[in-house]
Length: 447
Image (cartoon, rainbow, N blue to C red):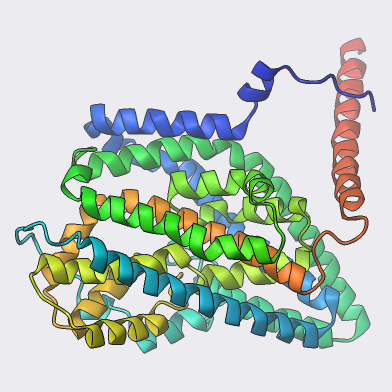
């Protein structure tokens, strides 16, 4: 192949996905604040990006997990990885809960004389229960698991994929190889699918933000909950510095190099406020960063259900905020009990739509805090959700790198060569296809 000419700076910017996502963000804010009626009507346009991404999630996670588990064949290593990941997730999310509790007690964002607002009517049947958690843990049908309810049940996909991968690893060699070949083919096709669909992200980001701004009364709504929003953002920054910072130091990771490598999935996570939207790019970014695919394919889906650091921190902060807004003092003992309760109820609710609000509503009910206070959160929840989702995705990217280093699966000898070889093979195939199309065109023109 003829070597490509180096791109100019202008061309690099104009062909950068990050640039167009930032443009989409700016246009979305402008549309939502200046043309709210249009933004509300045009909101479904965001599905041009969001729906195909949801379509990708199931086959991508399922195929990568099956390849990672069955291809590796060492089920003891899988068990060891699962134990390490679970302990890491439990420690980090507990620190998030505690830090959220400390921040809300220091700043007291709810002591601003809020008036009673309309009850958001989160009914008892909607609240998080043990039965709901079990139903979202165990897959019943393929359709339910693939997102028949409107979004992929990631926790069910994780459970089904692990069991299916283990069963494949234990199968006879012929059957095992057939399944592995199919799963490997699906995995690579899904990555190519991502490369196509991801360019609709700026459109999805634009209309997602425009709809969120328009439906919540414009940007002015943020001023009424300004102290709560600032408290959450600053607490998440402190969490990243205080909790993730030592992890970077201990694991000898360069944070600048890490953030540069994870740039695209993190920007997609923040601007769409949807972890699922960033998932395909998370897989690609971690592989390019040097994490072995079988580590990524297990740790990331596992973390998407059990390692939601930003959402977990928000649970304690928002719950105590609601108590403060209602003028109810909670003792240290009650707050500690609340943290212990949230340690359990915050795990594995990724498949439940509006999980944070549901868990908060259930917590308020348990501690005799008026339900109307949940309505205070809804106006600025879209903006706070952006920061929570960013932290969730960041935490899972870091967790995958940590687990890879602990398992000796980070930047193994020849990883860059293997990565470039794979990409070159794919480019050669594309280049060969282009040459065939040109030859066909010339042949037909002569005829």
